[in-house]
Image (cartoon, rainbow over all chains, first blue to last red; front, side, top):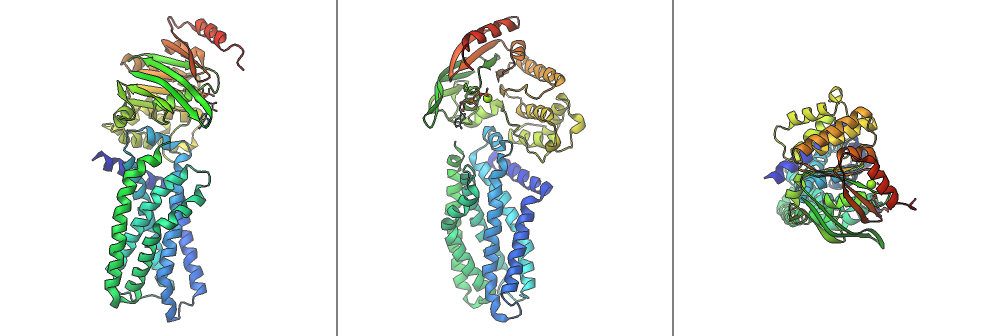
Length: 226
Length: 234
Ligand SMILES: Nc1ncnc2c1ncn2[C@@H]1O[C@H](COP(=O)(O)OP(=O)(O)OP(=O)(O)O)[C@@H](O)[C@H]1O
Ligand SMILES: [Mg+2]
């Protein structure tokens, strides 16, 4: 049980610290806003065919602003050797991972809640196939992305070029999730007749998530080892 | 209480610790002295489970520290060079956070007591990032002992402290000693070492070169032995 209470303490610590400084979340949201505005310049929002851009834009926002957040997640623990405080405290490695994961996940969800309605507004997107499925695919795709991302961010944080290392390591591991998520989002938003296809994509992501989440929890101990 | 067996630490082809054998009894206060770069901080880091030795083992209460990591960690309070505090948090928030992670009961009360003890009651709600070095060190000390550890590992705890804070720190260490807490303190401040500690260990070049008991706070003895052993070392 203490694994979860400790994880909550760590997640709360990250979110509260973010609430006080608002550095990372602001950067993520500004970035998302820029992507949306540039997309609306590049693709004429009044033209119906450009609706096809929306699923791509959503996942571009999630991936890139997500990476901005993940990069800070462990690097921020280096300032006063804070990581050493966590490592000398009686914590399971799993609770550090879960706490960090939760904080990153919640931050990414906040960005999505702010950015996606803005995107829909600018592109004048009103009718989607299925709102519950849309939420589901966002949730499950972001979950896997952050689960793997948090693990790799910890791995990269010990390196001097962590900002570069993280995206390079992340890309191959999360591409199955991204491919599935983009496909499923496309179907759910614009082509709801093919819903069964979207569901199989979601199932694929779900299975992938479970495997990698368990692996990350179990292997995190070795990432922290110096 | 603390036992190290043939600790060796290598980084690349550099040898930092060359076979450190230590045996510290419960309730002892031990000062580790030695020139810069001798490996003193490294010894503390190994005992605090922060770094793994290349070979050798550390036993705490006769338990191997890696195998009983959680149990051992909750016994230890570690104060390194860095403060380990979260800059944006107030002293109170820092202590409550770490108190929770260490499973301290009635954590808010304990945190407030400690802050009062280190003389920062007026700064309870100011973020640590606005503090001076000495004030930060005071909070860092409080953080290290928030869970009433049985063992405290202090790395140059007196640096940056004013006279009043030095008195406070020494009092805290002696109080904890009276309750049977074991203290290992790395320091360059012989006066403080002689005042608090009953055993002195001198480390040079990754090895223990002297280890003696100290009676009547005999400062001169420490100076003499140290000068003798580190002669010719710059
Ligand atoms: N991560 C590391 N990589 C390489 N060398 C290291 C590392 N950490 C410490 N050292 C080396 O190990 C030696 C001992 O370091 P340590 O910090 O234990 O010294 P110290 O006795 O605490 O010195 P000081 O009195 O200056 O605090 C030094 O020569 C240092 O350069
Ligand atoms: Mg040192």
